[in-house]
Image (cartoon, rainbow, N blue to C red; front, side, top):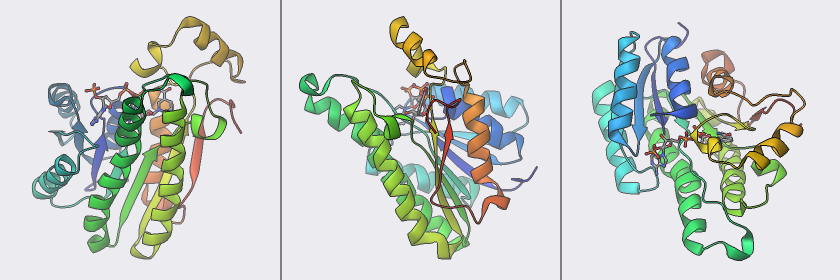
Length: 246
Ligand code: NAP
């Protein structure tokens, strides 16, 4: 129970990788604040975590909206009294080849995937700085490092997370706050289930371990960065991809 008494805010925590991260951190004793666009789904996930013995509350927010983010962090601070861990997990795709990509799809992905990390991390460091302790972990992607046809917006947003993470790491190391990123490869969730079989086959052929990853594979990596023992590890990216990129 190495996270006992700590409070973790997980964005996009209602399902997929975020839900698994919330479960993993709860299993280590953390109290969980789940933030998601869909409050109903987040409340159902929070209920499931409470049934397993966790202290968990759900918050509805659009992570790309400053007003929503400020309100959610205020509520978390009021309900839990502190914040030790922020996991920037919420993310979306709006795929299309460069020539055909609509500016709205570019903006939407950059806002939900990257602006959100700026907004949430900004609120988190205000609380963590006073505590002289914090762990910020953001979910990037293998696409930030390898590129992927049809994902100029997504690849740019995830590469942006890496630069943002390294800069937060430098700005707040002196306050006991670490900032790291986890870059998953192909993980089986609703996000990847919608990909055509042909794309899935191509992906599989490029994975040396011969299998797709699970949300739990990502959650274990996040959990390491969140642990008290990882205090000297900052500005790093951990790749969780079965050897697809190294
Ligand atoms: P997912 O199953 O689609 O879940 C994403 C969650 O984020 C959903 O609960 C969604 O809520 C929420 N969300 C979306 N937009 C939001 C917003 N504006 N504000 C608040 N919450 C929002 O996705 P996933 O596969 O678990 O992905 C989680 C993260 O891992 C993402 O950042 C993704 O880019 C990254 N990642 C995934 C893979 C993969 O292979 N799956 C690989 C690399 C990186 P709704 O249900 O309301 O939409």
